[in-house]
Image 1 (cartoon, rainbow, N blue to C red):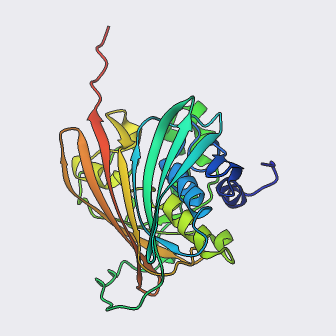
Image 2 (image 1 turned 90 degrees about the vertical axis):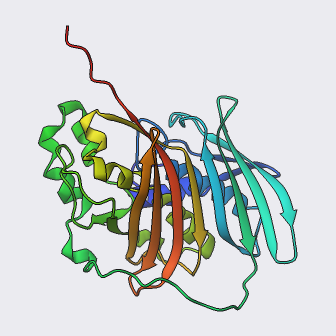
Length: 294
């Protein structure tokens, strides 16, 4: 990866995984959304691309994944693909991601030939246009002074996905509010990419702000030091062709929290209102006890 790449170009590069052997691939560990550990969507997208390298003739319709250990961004990730089934209409793959000799993630994905059938979907909500809401960079710049100096550069670092939250909250002192959580996102550099890469880019983006839905009713964010969060699992269904260079609405909610976990759901619509994907994830949201005063 070269330093003159834009963040979007870097993301396309890290999804262009390297083949080491039959059904064995290597992906870049660093880059993308986070620097302290590998972003969950990063591993999902690379694992899906590894599966796609063994399924050239049909598209993924669903994936189901578990996050097992935190990913180390300082070293590559090895992806081992198991060709579970090659059927007439459906193909199934299992992908295991490995670092330091241990599984950090595993995923099952199913691929389906194109077929005709009955069509129906829930309508997209009217939340205004992307231009009605501040972009992520401007929103973060308004809060950067509340962070310690050593975290500010990373907080303001340019990222590959353009994101605009609908009715954004205060990062540090939010009110308890509805679990309903919506944002617009896109990556203009996705223009011209093939259908497999469009799926992988949307899979990457599908982990953004998802777990945050379950924090909203409790007046929590990641910046307060009150809650330990991590994605535990992730499921995704692809419904329609994707052009991620265009704006998409991510309509999120979290119908349940309890036992140190939160359950989150998302529906992804094209700007024209077509439902292109659905997402579900359970996340850890463990309370952090305040440090005792000396």
